[in-house]
Image (cartoon, rainbow, N blue to C red; front, side):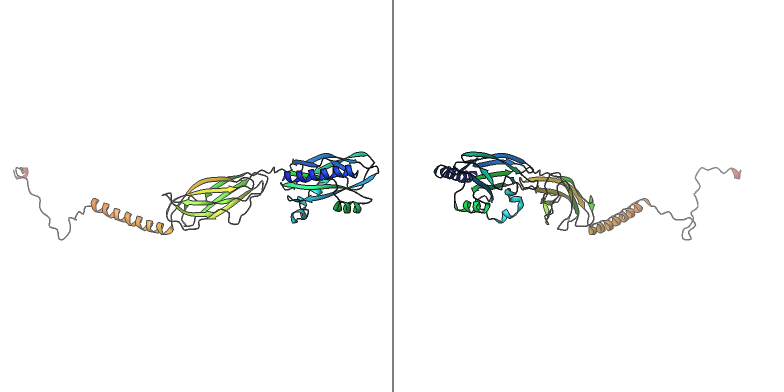
Length: 322
């Protein structure tokens, strides 16, 4: 990229020197400005113009935006954010240079805050004529001195996404489609689109489901948080499960986040079966205990039961008979 512009610049610089020497016209320096700055940066330079002729000439700076390939006609250049000529401050009306003399022009590049980090290219053609239209026509027909500007707008954006919360809405679910909540916080300076999945594993560590974290590609705005509420795609059976979160984000560099949470699913049919089974078990145990601990004793006055007189013990002395 830089080699391309340096080659062009050297060519035009050499051509301008030849013209100056052969036809006694104009030279400019520097021929190339190659610099970098962040958005809202201000760059200041001086441009030297020297008149090699024996008469006064009127110079008109002509600015053009260029693409990476040097093209001046591009849909991209229609966007002001990609037009460096809108950021350049230089005297654009007639500039008088006396014979065999030189002048210096201040040049400023004021990078706007909304400038998109990228490489920008422009050229300034220093053409002369009685008026601007003539200078522009001369610039098209003749090899007039040019200065190329290569500017790299630095990317100072900060991409930082973190997990605030990752948890099931309940620890124990009766429904077979559990809900999992996720909250992501963007503490950076640019909006971020998180991508990833939540993988569900059973107690045997077998993957039973995976949930697309952000199918609609919702972005988390800079300096804010975003809440996701997700349900499993498949109905889960009764058991204990592990949910594994894997998220990646980043426009410049891909970064990842991960976390784990646990939950239990107890489905309604299982509860029903367990409830009836528990009741049956309690009834069975109660009956067994009752049979082992209860002894039936018949009543004495029952009509079918005869009273048996008590036998007198031998050797008993009856004191009343004496």
